[in-house]
Every structure is written in C-alpha cells, then in structure tokens.
Length: 340
Image (tube, rainbow, N blue to C red; front, side, top):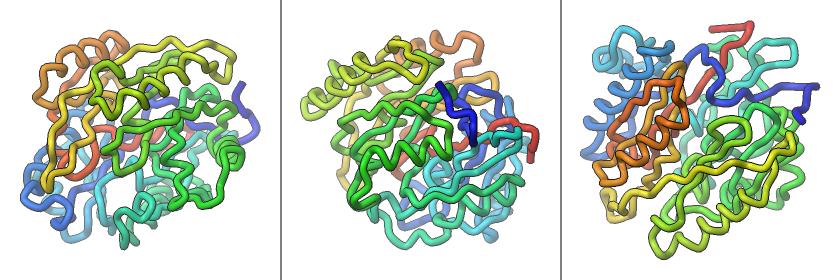
C-alpha cells in the first residue's frame, strides 16, 4: 500500500527529468586529491549526460572552471554551496498529488555534526527547489538523502544508526520518523536495518548497505566478503531483509554483492567502498569500480539486474577520498508535469 493522499517519492529507476550534482570546492576536504576529484566529477557528469540532462551546481567563482571541465551536455548553475554531495545536502524530489514537482528539504547538520559549519549546504535544498520550480516541503527531521531508499510503491529502507542518531535527531523514535516519511514521501512500510559498516562516518547511510532494484527486489552486501568486524552486523541486516515484507505484502527477493578489499584514504581512515552505491539514470546503470578483483563480479551482477539499461563502470576511488561515492554525488529529479 502507498499513501495516495500526499507527495510520493518515485523509485530511482523511474524516468528522470535530470540529475543534480555539485562541483568539488573544499580544499580542506580534498587536499591533494581535489584536481582528481574534479576530473572524476566531470567524467561522471558527462557519462550521465549521454542519457539525461545534468545540472552541475558550482560556486559563483568556479562556474567557468566547472564549465571548462564538463561537456556541453552538462548545465553549470551558479549557486553558493560548501560540499559536493547533492544526495545528502540537496532536495529529495517527489511527485505531488496533482502531478507537480515537490522538493523535500530535510534539516542538514553536517552528518550529525561530523562536519560543522556547512551553512550554505543547509540552504541548498531550498535553493534547488526554487531553481527546479518545485514546491518546497520543509521537515524538522535531520536526514540525508543517502540515508533512505524507496521502491516507489510505499516501502523505504533505512538504517537505525543514521536516522536515529542522537546527534541528528535526539529523542526521536521510529514512529515519528515513519510518520514523517509517510507525510512527505508516501511511505507506508519502513524496513529498518540494524547495522552499518564500522568505518562509515555517516553511521549507516543505507545507500552503502542495501537498495531496491525493483519492487520486491533488494540488493544487499554479502557478509561472507566483509571484514571480520562487519560480518555480524551485515548478517543481521540480511536476516532483517529476509524476514521483511514490503508495503504490498511481498517477501523480498535478495541479491547480494561482494565487498571490495579494504583500502585506506588520506589520513589512515578506511574508505567506505561498496558496490551498493551505484546510480540509475535514464537508460543506464552507473556502477562504481575500485581497481579491485571484485569489480567485475559486481559489475556483471548489477548489469544482470537491469538488462534494459546500459551498464557503465566508473572509477570511484577519487570520490571516496572525499567521503562518498557515485550515488552520494548524484540526486535524481523525477519527470513530472512540472519539469525544470
């Protein structure tokens, strides 16, 4: 069942009007990897632009640079911002009951205060809503877009560690979160995953753990390929999915993906590398690659899940040096009766 009385978040595989991205700008975050990050963002934007329009947000002083790096299919839009993770800082676009475009503006606090002072990013969702001609829908909930995945038919996947983080939403319980998801996204069934990868500084963005591939079909991490410290938690996640039903009452068909071998980022912290962090655009599935032996198995598995889409492999390690992946740097705007 889906709530028909309000906004509805379409699944990622639904037709898009465009993809939103944001140009890397923070030298304090990227360090010596900033140039490589910019090349990777441009490569990803150009790959997606072959299938659908791409809007690249850039700081006013970096518009010319972003335009130079990106191809002609990428529209560069001047807008103040801090970081470059539109999945988390940008609007979550929804379809309004009358068919128009809505934009959910979650509260953003720098991932539970992990990255303070990102005041421009806290305003980004509202600015994106205005640029897209969408109705802005404000929420009191601190939630990043990477923390939620939906099937478009009333079901959402969330991880307890992220959304129920006391630094993000102190005192907020599951029932309150579920009520807000119903009001803003049309979600009537939430499946809560109990565990997250131990080196994930987001404390459990679900787009690193599990996602829908179709109604009734979920992709999740294979615990057998995880490091010892993650095996138990990922097994608990898999058990939760096996026991769950979706909003339509269906048992879930589960496909697992391997984890690549661990790799340290600058500063010694492990990169949160996961093939779950792929992105669907119109006609293509963009799959992360990590220069790892598991790359080809993950690529073939994801390609088989989406036989009507062109599989595209993108080197994702440069994104991870900044803290995110292919899915983290993209945000889809669904096609509605109110296109940009």
